[in-house]
Length: 224
Image (cartoon, rainbow, N blue to C red; front, side):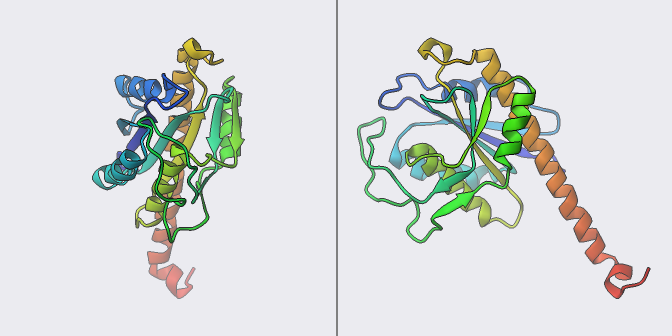
């Protein structure tokens, strides 16, 4: 697999969360050396309906990432919560500026639900094997985390080249009562990144191998 670009996003504060640990984690990942063989681009998005609607798709088109890792804060998470699905639904909740959405669905003609290609259960087990608390979840909710996740999954489906998208909710920071230390959150993010890179590499190699077989005249003609 050629040097893949990994897009990592976090969110800023929102009502009820003056400090968003996903912003800290995204910025911390930007400051460490990227895993071998990949390039990281990190971005912290304002927790605002209009900003996510505009900047989310623009980031995807600008960077065209091979892997997307979205991070978000869940005040109820006790560890890393790997989200399987994004739903084409929007909750009527105020954002960081006090604005409310003017629609009830992410995309008017979109599917009711989009799922990641990553096995959330396997990734959660992988994290637990590294002594990191993790669980698989079936829904990213109906707030801005889900909104961004749905936009990215929809965009990935429209691309000819593969793009794997994952959303992970993390607990509040230790200062806000979270159960994970900053060192544990950073280590967990590194484990997740390595897992996603290995998944993408295996997927790309399988696709390349299948393409080589299909292009082999002997195979095409049924010759041994």
